[in-house]
Amino acid sequence: MPSNISVVTDAEYNALVHRLDLMDASIANLDSRLKKLEASPYYDDFKYNYTFGENTTSPNKKWASIYLGYGSAVVDGNGLRIQPKAGALAAALIASTQQWSNYLVEWDVTNEAQVATNPQQWMCPWAFIRYLDKWRHYYLYIGTNDVEFGKKDAPVGSSDSVTETYQKTLWTGGPATAIGQKRHVGFQAINDTFTIWVDGTKIMEKTDVSSFKSGSYCIYVEGAKGYYQNVMVTPK
Image (cartoon, rainbow, N blue to C red; front, side, top):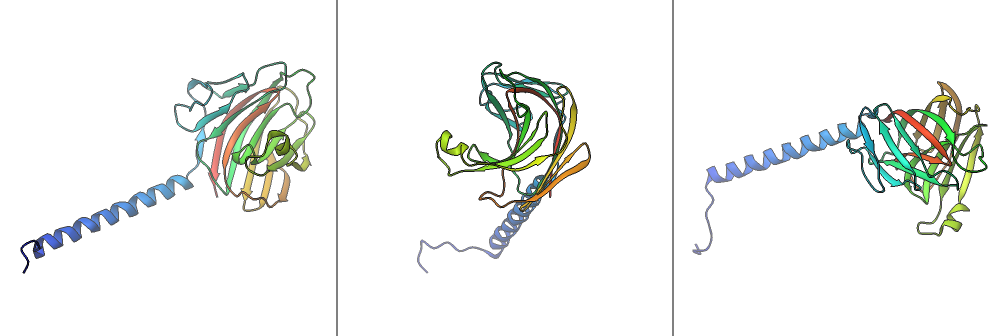
């Protein structure tokens, strides 16, 4: 037998097999825990205090600021108050750090004020659903006249002017929401079917096909000051 070949005893071999079995069990346990985490509700009651800056993450690691429109996003211990700079039309966006495909998301929201000059009914709190980036997402806004559901599904990397041409209104209807009126909103995405509830009443169920099938839930305001509370995402 060549002198450079080591002989492994039965005891050493059995110990190695045992270690490998333990590693397999540990990996399987970790995979199970990750799957349970992905399937568990993602909830924030905002019972903490925090002020977002540009490109910052909340203390609980659930939210990341994408842009603030030279305005502010402040968690005050009961909710998140967010608004872009008043005057010229601007927007602010906070995204969940986790993404989902099929899920139900519920939240309480109040349009506290319209802060842009010459306010329009869509200057209000919004939500982005299955948000990947500024080119690909669904949107829902709770306007002063009605509710609107739509999407952007533009070529990635296209300019802002081109991207805007890909914004498509998919549905408009439902109740008007006065300034200062609190709403409980539910939105469900299951494959290509989307459902909206306002204060427990289903107002829309619609099918739509897009190039993207998953993404973040986002808090978004345009030309308004919105107050968001009790956000819960339940994977389906």
